[in-house]
Image (cartoon, rainbow, N blue to C red; front, side, top):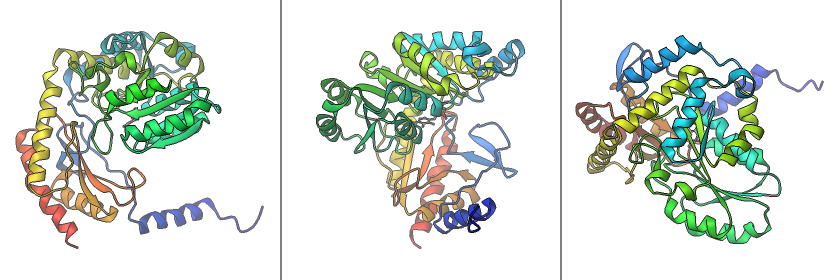
Amino acid sequence: MPSERPELSHAAGLELAAIRDRGLWRQLREIESSQGPSVRLGGRETLLFCSNNYLGLADHPEVIAAAQEATARFGASSVSSRLVSGHMTPHAELEAQLAAWKDCEAALVFSTGFQANLGVLATLLGPEDLVVSDALNHASIIDGCRLSRARIEIFRHSDVSHLEQILARHAPGARRVLVATESVFSMDGDCAPLREIVPVAKRHGAWLMVDEAHAVGVFGKTGAGLVHELGLTDAVDVQIGTLGKALGSFGAYVAGSRPLIELLVNRARSFIFTTGLPPAAAAAAGAAIALCQREPERAAGLRSRVRELGASLRAAGLDVPHVESQILPVMIGEADRAVRAAELLLERGLYVAAIREPTVAPGTARLRLSVMASLSQEQLDRLVKTLPACVSEVMSR
Ligand SMILES: *Cc1c(COP(=O)(O)O)cnc(C)c1O
């Protein structure tokens, strides 16, 4: 062995020092309560503005009860791959419920959204194929594209004419072509122009995959997502979503045609070679979907309150884009300023996430507010009062 090879802890230490120097240090913060609007953090009550518990379902009594009952009846784990003995009644019930909710032929539950994206892309595409992916797509889509070994082309964020140019140029030589986009973008809160993307994809014989991670539960009359809201269910070949955000549970789904789902069962390595979802998570997600269907006012109310919040923050002089979703970015620019602003907010009892590279492009660091339906007007007012001062303090240095 060459003697110049460093010990692991030495190599890691050097890399960590570089991360620190660039203001990109990440650390875990321990929440000592459930994910309500106010949480215990460092022994202190803190308002939570960075949880994906958008509808307050993770701590909803019906969701908790469903998880408890499923655990009592089916145990704490499914213990095996779904294809061995890990396919249990809560999975089957949830998949039927998901397919009906989304008006799709079939649905398949994966253990995480990350694995769902890896599994779909690596199953559907190979080296002779083309994937055209939005520039702001989630890390799991990016990794899925790489894993597929297809040719990867990136279109400028939500730029349909750029998408069309790429398809015109590269689609003719490809065996299969797939266009991948999120519906609600996770770090910007804006919606993909799905109505325009659909005909462009069709014209070039491309399949369309839409990741609804941040839309499911919140968009659509009964929370079935933006694709459903726009009436595009039949035009979108693959819908993916997580059970771990608005639905307050854990896991993910793929919804589409029956052949798609059967192919994934047979081929998707991230489905086959992993333990099935715990019964509690499947049952909790099912209870959350039932709540979305029965009480759609929760999501509708959230969306109107976020619009008001965005207007108030802009009126206070902050750079907050107009978005339709529950994700409101407050643009800052430099990573260390965003981090400092988040620290100032935390000192004042507000937990807001600072988002920087590599999650977003360098120079576009931001505070990302994710708004929960369970926050009171008074709690939102506190944010509007506190945030502008913290931002101007970091911007003036
Ligand atoms: C969170 C997220 C995922 C991953 O979902 P998990 O179930 O948390 O693994 C995938 N895609 C997008 C767009 C996401 O925001």
